Length: 155
Image (cartoon, rainbow, N blue to C red):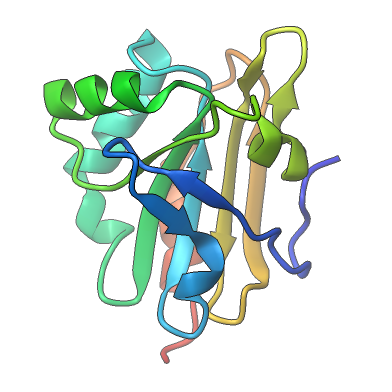
């Protein structure tokens, strides 16, 4: 079962594509965080989704919200993918222990060894204000993310 709206988001620390640690709780009280889990770097659907996010980043990331994308890919793969696609938001590696954060959020697909498409908006207080989980092969509607970000209280 995935993390639900109204629950405290499980904290995590994951390396970004440069292997710098990103700790969710360090943003508490400073910025909301849109956490976007996806299956694999370089795959067609994931590239399309993250390029759409990249192309409309101002609708999701601003002085109040930080976007992070999480997969079970190793950091070097994420670095190459970010460079190839021009992503201007952190790509986090949940590679080892494999998928541990995705499991904590209830979005790990055991048979595929990957995260499914889970999206969580974590408010300033660390509480999940939006949660959406799509299974393998199911596309996401980023318009719902925009509405969730727009609905965040000013602060």
